[in-house]
Amino acid sequence: MSANRAIWLTTGLMAASLTALLACASRFDANRKAEEERIAGILRSYLEDSDIVDNSLGEGETHGMPQYIFIEPGTDYLSKLRADIKALKPPELVSGQQFLDRACLELTKGTRFDGKIQINRPPQRDTVNIYVLRRDPKGITQTFHGNCTYIGWMNAIVCDAAFLRRMLAEIDAYTEFYDLSWFIDAQGPIDANRTTPEMQDEIRRQLKACFLLWIIGHEIGHAVLHYDYVTGRSKPIHLHDAGFLQREQEADRFVAESFARHQDWASWFWLALSEIFQHEYRKHMPPDSLNSSDNPNPRLAAQEYLSIQTSTYDLPLVVRCIRMLCQMVAVLPKLDLSGYHNEVNRHITVVEHSEDVDAYLLVMTAVLLILIAESSRVWPASRRG
Ligand SMILES: [Zn+2]
Image (cartoon, rainbow, N blue to C red; front, top):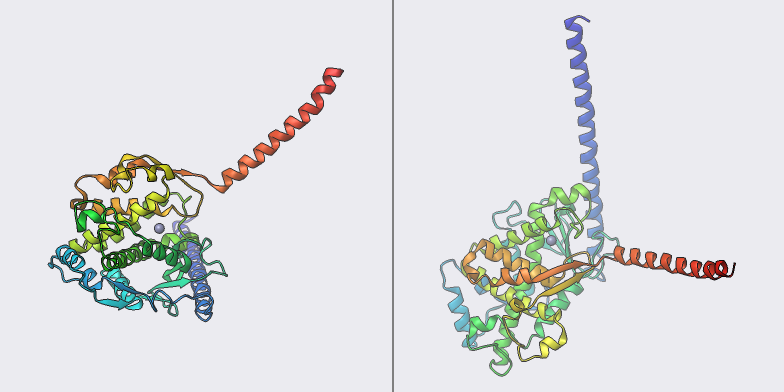
């Protein structure tokens, strides 16, 4: 073969490979575009159905806190909050919608979604589209109940309205406060005898606001960091994924770093989350230990070892909460110089109890029973023989 011919042949082969690659890439792009369109269509159809979309978070409910959360840097926020709560100074309330809008703007600051975030609105490209839904009949989240899920396509985050409402109602029912006692008044746990109803109302309002910021902020973290990962596999992030913990940590770290922009803001968020953790933790404690004189001991979690079983799609809230707290401390070590939250985290083990294991055990038990039945049928006969 002459040198010229070889060059022509090589060039031809390279051109053919390049064309094939480009065709593949454009088909890949077309598939992705089609999937974005399909999800956008479903989301639009959900918005048209008042049985599916839930706007109650933005309607009636009001959340006190923005004057603290969005305080000017440099203001002594904690002293102000402490003084206001003690003085029963009425907070400046905003509507739920105003709160969510401002919170979302704050959480996307400095990201590629800066200012591009909306809740229960027709989906837009290059925007974080959050949906609070009563149900997900077309299954775009795969596991809808009890969670908020980032689904990748259209940068959509889908929240189970019942989950958010249940958690807000639980916080509304808090009558004792554990970690907050050290902040408001270091004389011991705050209970109904030592606080006025107005003071408790204000604390609960602040806790609810921080809960929403945490849950929504975590999913915004996934949207900022994990679009390629989630759309590349066409499945939301799952407990059984390789690298699940790392992605969860990254999303938590995103929240921690957003809050770390204002140290006072971070301090309050950390304290509020720590309080929510105390309540979640007590749900997993044996009832006798809670009836003991130790309760309500705010440092209970550092003294006990807790094993938590999980069989769900996501981690139980108590585990997510302590891990979020540890990320806060990792970003801002001054928050917890005692190492308390890391110590608590070390005391909690997660035992996976999957339904697959249940099914496997059931089948094995059935096989064993059949074998025993068979052998007992055969055994007497052979003995007689
Ligand atoms: Zn997550």
